[in-house]
Length: 173
Image (tube, rainbow, N blue to C red; front, side, top):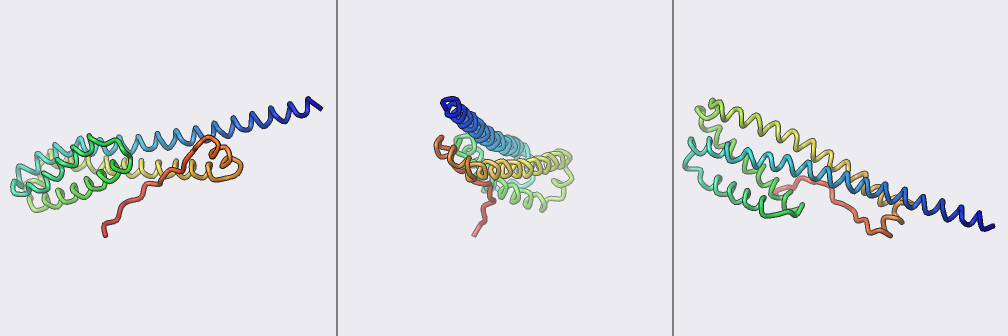
């Protein structure tokens, strides 16, 4: 009789360990996916000063855009909160669109080789960022599903696993 009880306890303990490890792996996938977004956002911010320098030479009177970009870069460095970084990233994308629109008004700038190279680098970074966001959302979906389904939801509750937010593009109202 004791062997049966001991066997059941061992099976339960092993099951809990396996389920806990699945949850930990899923949580690390979410963290890894977020770090990939951060890397691409940082790449974008690293390209901005060079682009700004080239555009500024042609569009000296567009100082408000450049001031906003400088403020965003400072905010990016000063924060570590995921929500804030995402919002700063969205604002930076909007300002980059504005800067590109400014550049459209200057045919000489659009023909500048450095500008073209930076524009290509930004385009490449935006593509990688889109992929990183998709990877993040996939990882979050897997993680959130695991902490929501039986019996993993019990283990998740015991060990304090919390639901993660999906990346959603903010909409301007």
